[in-house]
Length: 529
Image (cartoon, rainbow, N blue to C red; front, side):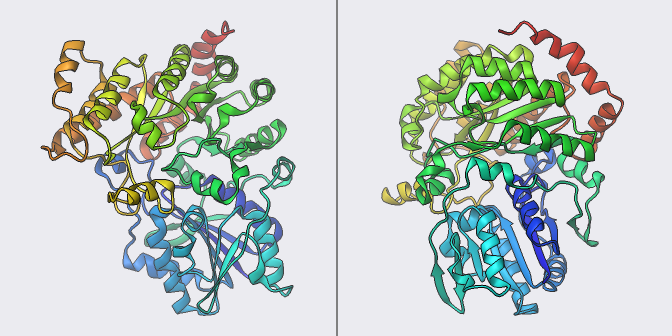
C-alpha cells in the first residue's frame, strides 16, 4: 500500500504537519511526504504586493493530481485559506483514480468538518496521531474503519460522524518520533513536478531558522481563533501539555546536525510563556550548554507575562518575543472574549520593555478593520499604541472571519457581514486614515500635538470615508524597512528567505553571526537578575 501525505500551505514551517508526518512514516514506511507551496508567505514582496494566494496554474494542478492519483491513500493537510485549492485537488484525484482513498486533515477540517467531508472520503477532526494509527490498521483489514474516533467518513454520500479520542498526554508527547525534517521530502515546483527538497530549498523557503512547537494548548478562548473550536471539542485543550526538556533539546540538536547553518529557533507555541518557571529554568540551563544559539518565542499571552520568566529566557538566548494585543479598547477586547483588559495588556508590554536592550524590539499583534468598532474604539487603540514603551514593532492584521468560530456566530447574531479568511488576505488592511496612522506610529512617534491633530481624522472601519491606497503602500514599505533595520542590528536574517536569507547563510557559515550574538550582544545580558 502506497501512501502520500501532502501539506498545502504558504511555506514549509507546517509544524503540526511535520509532527504527523514523522508519526505516519513510523507506522507505515511506504509513505511519501511532500509540500505544495503556492506562494511563500515569508517573502517580503508577497507581503507588500498582497500576493499571498492559493492559486495554481492549470498545468500545475494537473501535474499534482496525476502524481498523487498513483497512490492508494492520499492525505492532505491544509488550513482554511488553502481549502479551495485542496478541494480542487481532491476532485481531480478522484476523477483520475476513483480507488484512491482521500483523507483531509489539518485545521480546516477541524473547524469546518461539514464543509470538508463533502470533498473527501474521510476527514480528521481531532488530534491525528493515534486516530490515524487506528484508522490505518482497520483499513488494512481490521474492524470497520469508519468507526474510528477523531474521524468523519463519507461512505458514498452517507456521513458518519464519530466522537473524539482523549487528548494526548505529556507522556504520549515524549514517545512520539521527532518531527520530520530533511528526511526524503519532496516539494512541488512549477514546471518540474515533485522534486527532492534539499538544503537549498529549505533556505529558499525558511531562511536559516528552524520552526517548531514545544507545547500544545491555550488557556484563552478568543472568539476569532480556531482554538475556540478545539476547546469546544474538548475543554481540556485549555490545559497546556508539553514534552520533556530533554526531548525538545534533542529535537533541535538533530535539526542542527542535518543543517548546521541553522542560526535560530522559533517556538510557535500558543502558550510558551505559560510553562512553569521551574521548567523554563531547566530549559534555559540546558539550552545554553547544549544548543547555545538564539531563539524566539511567538506565543506570549498578556496575563501570563512574568518578569522572572522573561529574565530566565533572555539570559538563555531569547532574542525576540511576540505577543497579541489585538486592540487597545476594552469594548473590543471583551467582544473578542480576551481575558486580558487593556490595562493588563499594557502592564505586560511594560514588563517586556524592560528587556528590549537585549533583544530585537518586541512584536505585538494588532487586529484592524473590525466592523463593530466605534470611533472611540479606534481612538482607544491609537492612544494605546502611541503610549506604549518604545521600541517595538507591530504585526498588523485585518480582521477575517474563520468559519465555525465564535466570531462568526457573534457577527451573525447582530446581522453583520464581514469577509472570511478565504475571501481576503488578512495582511491587507483597508487603506483608511486610521490604519495608515497605525503604521506611522509604528515607524516613528509623532509629537503629542501632531498626534492629537491626526486623531481628528480617524474613523472606524464601517464608516464611509476616503481611502489612500498609495499612501498605505508607501508606509507599509517604510514599516518593512524599519523592521529590517531592527534585524540588521542583530545580524538576524533567519526570517528572510531567498537572496536576503543567503546573506545570513554566508555570515552564519563564516561564524560571524554566532560571534556577534555571543561576544557583542549576549554579554550585555549577563547582569540580568
